[in-house]
Length: 260
Length: 349
Image 1 (cartoon, rainbow over the protein chains, first blue to last red):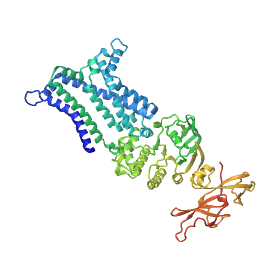
Image 2 (image 1 turned 90 degrees about the vertical axis):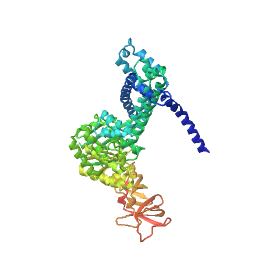
Image 3 (image 1 turned 60 degrees about the vertical axis):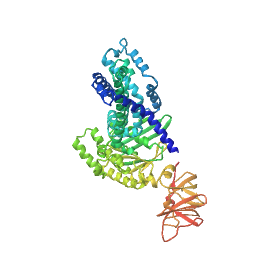
Image 4 (image 1 turned 180 degrees about the horizontal axis):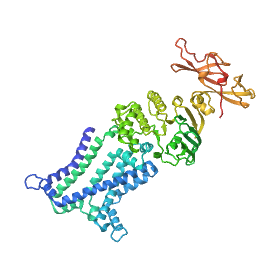
């Protein structure tokens, strides 16, 4: 009886999540009257705006990931190694983006870095892109920090550091050749989550007026019928693709096999 | 001045003084063990030599040059850790070659040195394996090879055998000693296991409460402990209470008998120590003390039988070899323990 209930609850859960997706996917295939087709997808892929915004967001995601790794890996490592007492405070700070809405952060940015401020980042496209990248890094911080910190927990950071030091390695070498490769799976998990966040982000990109994929999705959704559904399916596929990659990387990472 | 000279070394963590006025000189090629219970400061001394802790006061010098101000990666001191500390992302060969790569050793020479090290530890065929594919003993041998590959001036071993099972411990400790002697590398070995320290070392430093209680060869430490702590920590010991009746002639009253001690002691109560192996149930050659008593316990330990005898004011343990032809003594039986008065150790507190 209990087993029946479990299966029943699982079925309800699956229907709750999958049915809207099935409905949306089916709708995205119905552009041609009376038959299923990929017309909506063709239109989306052929749209130069799609290519432009998607390329822009992918580029921003890659820069955000690189900056996030440079910021988070040394920080999390140093906190674990030298400042373990500060861990709760650092964790609290990294969680702040979850409770402070993106719109508050971006308005703060605009106020601080507008053209009449001492650092007028919004005055140029490059400056605004930089600001947007910082914003994305902030939004992804809770996920990136947690992922890296969890990775660091699986290795003996202090002893590995001392072993490398005794062999002549300096801090940069230790980070690049000992710590980073050993938390690579965790870093990649954080990177894929960052990618998924950046690809779909709307608020910051829209308010900073950058040609990102999020505002494009919103624009298309406001003006077309079938294409937004196709775009939503594409966005889902991207996110799931990222999740699948996390699993793949974890599975194929040679030296972590023993830990699983 | 010794090759490695530690002088007036002190270390405090907050208000706690962990190492107090520690002095030690180690000659080149010598194998010195720091032996003591947990929390005695032995690992802290080792970590200060490695550069992982900064001394509160004192100096550490190698070949006359003070190294206290140098960072750990500038000291050229190899270290083997209790937890192996092999880099999980690197193969065995890459682990061994790590330090060589950092030092910028040319690839061909580095590969030859890695091969030489792997052959030295008998793991030539496992060079392409990852650490998780090795046993604990193999991992520790790789850690040793990795530490030695860079040809360090000093090798530090921080309880490297503690995580291994008993059989591998014995074989690996022989292997470490053999490699150390072959390479002639100055080594400091930290352990709380007296058997390891006694069997491997040229000299032992017995530490207690942050100070070096006694420094000596394994023979001296075992046979001539100078303090009660050293005598109690190294080996099994009988503690006997006596009273000095004639300080000038070193005569002490023990269980009502007058016994002449090997050295003079001040008048009053005295604590004497006696190793179980110098006591016998049969009067032997040179045995000039005989104390009657009652057997209280008999422990069969295989090749050896440990017997405890109550002599009135003291309880004495002694070891006799197991003889299959004669049954072991039984508790309650009357017996006489005999020993040579020369074997009595007079301990300082």
